[in-house]
Image (cartoon, rainbow, N blue to C red; front, side):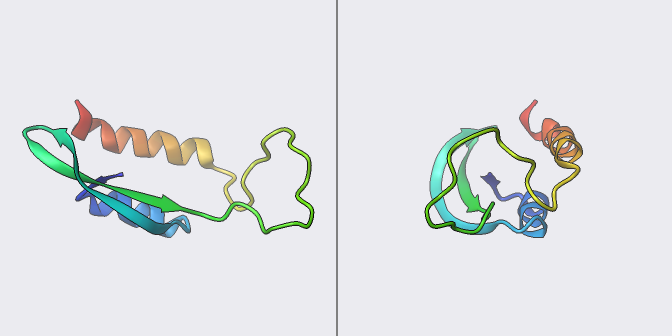
Length: 81
């Protein structure tokens, strides 16, 4: 996600994402250089051996992913117009 963006950082933190790195000044947007943060969230615990690939299941605890994405896109639209 592009930084600074406290609302987006807060949303990702609330959804269980953890920061894993930041690329400094790699994006040019509206006349300024922006940092880009990378985050991750564990989707499942490890199995030994891992299950065979199949359909992508709904992420446990995320029954409203479509709504979250819609809200995020709406909020972000003002910055990216």
